[in-house]
Image (cartoon, rainbow, N blue to C red; front, side):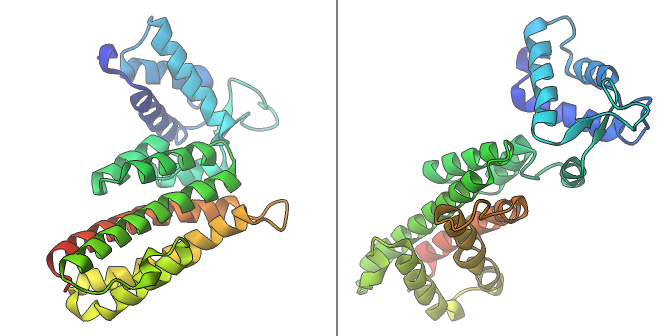
Length: 260
């Protein structure tokens, strides 16, 4: 099994053990016990390189603010530790929370195939989020969303040309806001041609890009304060992004088959 152990698998198993042991009390929730159990499940005991990879993943939990040392004031240091508020939020949504970058990307890629640009930006967004670089996260998520929007625009323009329709100039403008508004206007004019599920998804999630994700990105990119965005704001952007990705994928498919 050890031959197939990846960094993603190590992190996944470690989080599983943390989740289980955190519910069993301080006697179990200690560094040595957690690491030994994770190593046993992974089948990597006595393999220094893989054990070091596990140690790196373990220390990442503290660096990212998921765990902190100490259980109480009588036991304030290692090997005792506890799950932080951020860590509890991660465990509550363990499979796809942005704090679990591998789980998030696994879920996202299972739902939709992103273009290479969007995929690279959202992957970097997760890296910056998990190192508490929230302004960078806001910009990365915004860029990933813009890439999806431009891809959708390109699909629409190609379809309009194939149908012999006149392409509005605003759809090919260099400004993303102008393109986004022109795209929304065209999609809104075609709502009656969409099936109910697609129409409802469009109405629910398209504003998420034009309002939440873009607003947070702009606040980070055009700052007027030291902390223009919060971790909660970028966390919300990351949670919304998969829904936007799925929506744009469905809209592109609809454009290719039904749009007229």
